[in-house]
Length: 456
Image 1 (spheres, rainbow, N blue to C red):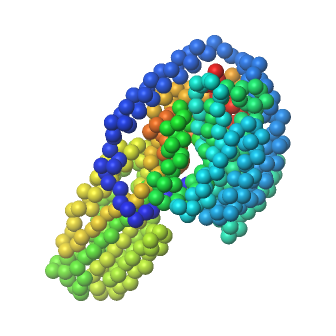
Image 2 (cartoon, rainbow, N blue to C red):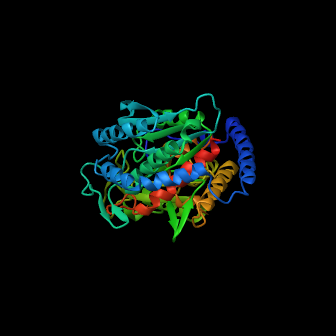
């Protein structure tokens, strides 16, 4: 997904821990204990049950069908701003979900300038089994004017826009659901599939754009995020956390005048003050799991950032002290508490002005962090047990700092989750993005068996 910029600032107070969050963490700790007990009770099992063997057989039997449907999805452009394309992908998916017994609904999102969200649900009649939220999205970063538009297969690899981010993940979800149905496990499951239509470029305000996802989080017990699976070398890797993504803007002013007075009667000017601030960010802010990037900078007699923060215009002369300077960048953290702390440090740095200068720092709303929690760790252990029972190479837990922001973070305060349950590949968000087609089956098998076990 991309960084965001909105006109309203976020305050540190808004990011502080709340009683609800503290209570939620206590609840997550209890859930972690429950999952640990389940894992211990099943630790003696070294082979798959008959039902689980039927799950594996179903996934493998439909592999070619999955590849063909992936090609069909990829060849429909669904760049976030191509509202018709996003809607068409949803229309292709609706009968697929309905064919395995899920009820499907469409939530239009014209109020934030986006196409909408597709929701598919299954409820076990009279059974209070674990409620699982499966998260993916319909859109890609490749808009209708991109030169990268078609699916091309070469052996076990395929190239195409959104192959791993995230249409391969959507195909994994469908394969898992079909396997649950054909194995006989689906009737006892409680599932919600949430496919947003604007993950790569969310509509604003986020409170509206993610309102329905947050509600889905509150209605379920755990979340599985089907973004592309990361690999460390040849090792399959699943994450239990992912970092936030927010943006900042810096505007500096100084007293203009003849350059002969710079640093003396004329003060230091806007460019020196901006440089001081950015360099102090670089020297004093680094800490684990934090990245702070300065992406755009300009200064002179006049300097202005575009509203989107993607362009800057400046003018001036070499013998005039700079009156204005601007900069933009992004901030990524592993917890909301870390975000609040770093934002406070940045604000303090900005406040110590050079002579005859002023500066203002603003933060835009963005994606929250998904901090690793004990319940998510216990859920990963359950998946690792599934992986072992499938006879696959050991599953590794990934470093959350290596993952970008994603939709699952909006529900991470309410329930534990796993990230990277989708297909593996390379080059996401870039022309030439590829998918490893051999990753479709094991990912679908892992997801389906995990859900079947949690639904007993």
